Length: 554
Picture (cartoon, rainbow, N blue to C red):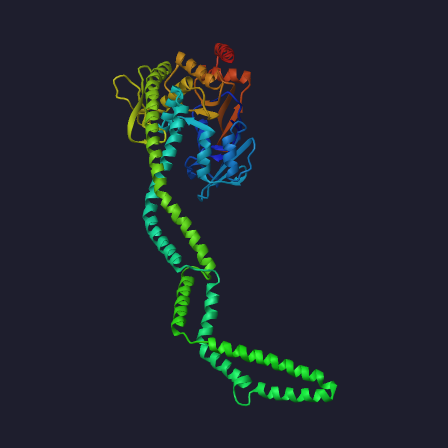
């Protein structure tokens, strides 16, 4: 609820601070005292268009601050918290206007956007008057009111959830169909790559082996000639090393028979001879195996070239290329499963469309029945509120395509006088009629998620017994919500839990507005003034006291 309202330099208001209480609060006072300016200031807090014309003459800045108790509004606390604002049980909204056009909005002391304020404000306050009626002038709210009256809120939510799922499945299908065209191209590419790698029959470490084999084949001539030459010099040719070593070994062996100290040397020479002989034989055998094979060399070059191309296309090593193939094979399997996914989604879509049609039919049936009852209930209330013969027609217009809230749009049409064709409320209802229509709705649908309601001009064009009935109905609404009402009728004012008198003062040639909270004695005088005019008589005071006593007992 709205607990405090501070207004500075708005129109004729200099500085004004109003503390508001739960229940019904009425603002009374002479015409032109500034009551409507207060409503305009509240409108700024709700995000209405800011004009520098509202700034008090001679001032550069106007400021409006509103303090709300939001302890019972967890959704707003959560939204503000997610938006980065510190928010517990109190919400302070400040809006400043400057002549330079640099207007600012603050929420709990931090800069905020007009979009955020315009989003949360209608969930804090609704104003019903000539230019403000967030509920009645928007057909989307008419549907919400009809569903609340007909008990279809849960059914509509179920329909909305189903509609969202249907839209999601349609989106998935549309994306899938688009993706399928891409998938065909992707499948062709991946299939080619997988087949190309598979045909290559890669083996880990193969390239290293091929490079080693290629080096041998490329050097076959050199390997053969050098190994043959080494054999000849060791064993096969004239003056071969082994022949000389044989003679030397024999000579030293003869000497060792004479000098036993040479036996070790003779044995070493014999061992060296045997080792060199084995080496020579090995070289001979090696040279005999070496053959030049240009065909095999070409095959190896071709294979290495193939591996090089695969490495350039896919990965630096054979192992990584094989890993890549595992990945694309998995993707190919997923792409092949896409067709099955599409069939599954199509079946789900068909099922959802049938459910939505059935649920939408149930919702329409409930709304049609509810519209008839709501028409009767609202017209009965409107006739009591000085709108005799008024027609209120909740109309249902089928939609070519369903929306998230059903198969039809709902709009309340209104005719204030018999014989006139009912038309949209915003084009035909006056400010007073809108206020009283909202009051009628609040009698039929008392529950609301908006904690504060402001009724402006609700008493326009009424009097007598109807005035008293309006007051009673306002007080009835105020048992569940905070209600503020501007009124000129004492029959309405006496039902208030709090009465504020708005006065216009002239000080040092400047006009300003002040607001006073009235006690019982002051209320009696104010109600008497509203009854009798400028001259307040004893009988007027007595009558006012009786009316207040009656109003307080309701």
